[in-house]
Each structure stands twice: as C-alpha cells, then as structure tokens.
Length: 405
Image (tube, rainbow, N blue to C red):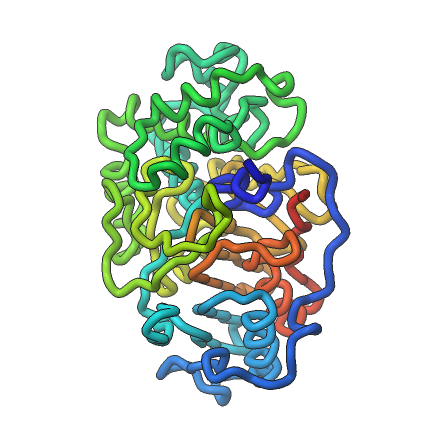
C-alpha cells in the first residue's frame, strides 16, 4: 500500500502522517502558484453575516483570492472557511462545490466528517474522568484494558501524548486491505487493536513522539470501562452538551446528518478517485469517527484551547506540550500547537478539517474540505491554513510540514 493511504486516520494531523520520518522543507503557499483566472466554482460565497465590511484590519479581498487560488491549485472541490479575530474580522465564506456531479454549492451549515479532531473529544472525555477522580493520567493502561503489549509500563498520559511506542493499526497492510476491499465494513475496537498488536513496540514508552491511532482506541476503551457507558454517550453528556455543541455527534455507523457535502478520496486499491461519503467510519472510532460543522467547531476551538470544561490544573496537563521533532510544532494530550495556533486537524477518506485557536489574539480558524487528496505531498488543510494565516496573522503562520512520500 502507498504511504498516501497509510495516513488514513493518522492523517488527522499532518505531523501524524510524518511521524515516521524526517521533515520535508515546507513548500511555497499554493495560492502563490494559482492561475489568475477565477473559475465560477472557485468564487467565494459569503455567509449572510459575513460581508467584507465586517473586517477591521484583515484584508478580506486578499483572503478571498488566496483561498480561491488554493482551492483551484490543489483541486479541492469545495471549502467552508471561518475566521474570527476580535476587533479585526468576522469572516465566513464558502468556496467551490459540495457535489461534483450536481455542482451544488457549499453551505456554512453543512456537516462534515472531522476525522482525528475526534481525538480532542476523546481526550476531553478522559480528562473529565480525571476531574471526577476516577482515573489518573499516570495510571498504566493495563489497569483498564488487558492484553496490551507492555501495558503495565504505558500510561494514559503517554497514550494521549502519542508517546506510547505502540504501532498504529491504520498503518497495517492487512487492515488497509480489509478496509479498502469493503469500505462499509464495521470494525470493533478489539479488531483494530489486534491489527496493531501484531507489531512489536516501536520504542520505549515516553521515549519520543509517534502519532498512533491505536493510542486513542485504548483511551476510548478506558472511558467505557470507567464510566460504564458507551463512548459516544459519555462524550455526548459530558462533553458535547456542556459545550453546547448541537450539531456534533459520534455516529453509531455510517449515518451522516443532512446537509452534508459529498466527499472524495483517492485512498482506494486502484488509486482511482471515488465518492467516499457513505464509507463506514467505525474503523476510526475514538480516533476519528465524529461529525461536526462550522458553528460547533468555532465554539469547540475556544473550549478546547481555554479548558472551560476542565479544572485549571487538568487543562494545564492537557497543554503540557512536548516536542514532536518538527520545528514550531508540539503536541499535548490530544492537542497540537503549531506556530502559536492551538487545536487539531482531521482527515479520513473524503474529508479534511482544521480547527485552531490563537490565544494571543483570541482568534479562531476553522477550515472544512470535502476531500483528503493531498497536493504535492501536503495535506490540503495545511495549505489552506497557511494561505489564510499568512494574510490574517503574519506573526503566526500555520505551516505543518509535508508528510514523507
């Protein structure tokens, strides 16, 4: 299998995909190389509440052009973008199409599969249990889940911080073949772990950073074991409801509330681009199965970064950001920091998302795309994020490196 598919749920973070080898030099912003002629389907469509006049310090015309150019250059069908900087801008735009056959336009109200942004919710669920005195981050995973290789030496903290050394099941050839042979297959957490546990530990727990979806499958099982509830129910009652996220959900299977765009991927056995809208996301479970929209992710960006659902000491544990081996990028307990921006990105076949918060300016950025097809090795959300922040926050330019080819 190609490395392109090995980023499957691990690609929820560009750093995740590149965790196995050295960083590549960042490419030039895609917008810089875009054609000058604008396609009708690359034109920005403003939300009713977001006109250029809403900006006080950010050039929205430049943003429009940079995003449209990036859309066209990368070949992304459609995008929903929201940028909010108090005193400077309240910018909501849609670009391109939600359906390549009908050419229906994107809408800011559409729901998206958010891939590994799910990890931010699973991590918060674990931290809620910490606040309730039911688990400790330095507990070994063996206390809650039997059969984990070396589990008596791997802590919940190391799982959340991607420092367990456990192999990621989504990189296993047999798993990839099983999923691509039948994208509608339902996987159980135990089946996913079995793919991972065939492989030896990659390094001693805590020794270094390696992004592994296996870590979050285990954390999801911890939540279920300790709470006595299904993970989706605990997240709904302990995370989504308190945060007032009305359109965010943890699906049981392949259900996908309307409205939503069609999602396109080339992560197939043949390499051909297909419609992956209705692929079953159970293979991502606690690491990548959730659904959300622009409105909810705007709220979640601030909740996640500021810790409004947690005790201050627990939020401090979440934000214990450690080096990833890539300049400007660090990782905490289910949270990324890149050049000042805090949050996470997500990817699974058909969709990508990016939700970030910049504490210094209380700025929020959300990007939602209906493809996961990379451009010259780069995750599309990285190129959109870089194009936007180069204009809006030049002192804090989001620029994850490209995954290795």
